[in-house]
Image (cartoon, protein in one colour):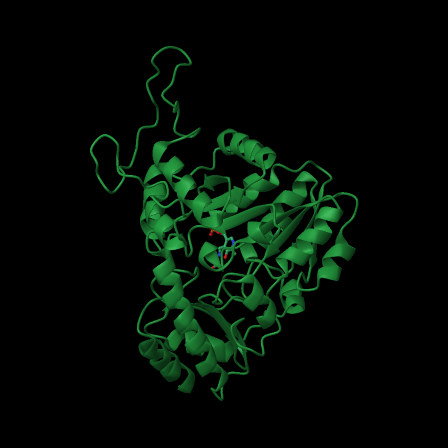
Length: 385
Ligand code: P1T
């Protein structure tokens, strides 16, 4: 900026990596669909050679995301799980990973049913207990994988405290910060080495693009990731990168609105006679509330989970909702509701789900940007049926 001040978050969301097109001045950067780039002579490129390796639209997206997360480097992928897989491919056979037990079901399945076959070993722990993470680390532990807030129980992990212990053990710390988005939480500032996002969620924000990103300020990790991004090839299309850039421009506005409504809805649910328990870190009786107030930036996210008496009642409530769509995913402008046990976390073995506390009566809401009174009205009629 002219006065030398670093532009604020919302300004960077609109402008970082999104400078007008140098050729035409277009304020919306073009989508570069070319798969290949002509070289002036063998090996003499203008910065690009082949679109899997690098692409101008993807580079713009990576620049914007890096700026928002306060990272030196961003590497974009075709989905959140493609990002996770590629990051885990930096490990060697025999390496050990300690991970938060309350993670997205697909992350659990990737670790348990796929990567284990390649001689990586995994231990699930309740990472809200920093001592439990420490106790699970062995001399083969290379990675501590955290999610905060967690999916679907919205538990809050002390990223700084875990990072300190993990670093003493020589392990790298990655935080899947999808539920918070960089509006609310920036794990690198808290001591983590790597941040991962399913950009499908808040960053895209409109339920029209699947994507993922890994961010870090560690040059060595970034270099190896960049090599694997090209070597493995799970890259996002230029059009998807462009959709993400479009979504990022309104990220801050959307997330603030979603948090305000989520907080109102969590308080309303808490008073409802059919609701047994509400999970939302913004409630002052949530076990992670004080930590979240310190670790997150002034708000607690747009996802609220709550428990009703049984799986049958949960099914009925979900069937009756009219504004909330019964659907997987989260973070977009339209409100969604789902059953983690029967949908997003059905791939987690039942015994593990029960151990973590994901019962059949649990309902997860992703709050959109609709009028909050309409959302409460919808929940009211569905719960009263
Ligand atoms: O769906 P994909 O873009 O591959 O991202 C996977 C993923 C990673 N991390 C977290 C915290 C997630 O929530 C997800 C995807 N989650 C859902 C689809 C869901 O409904 O929970």
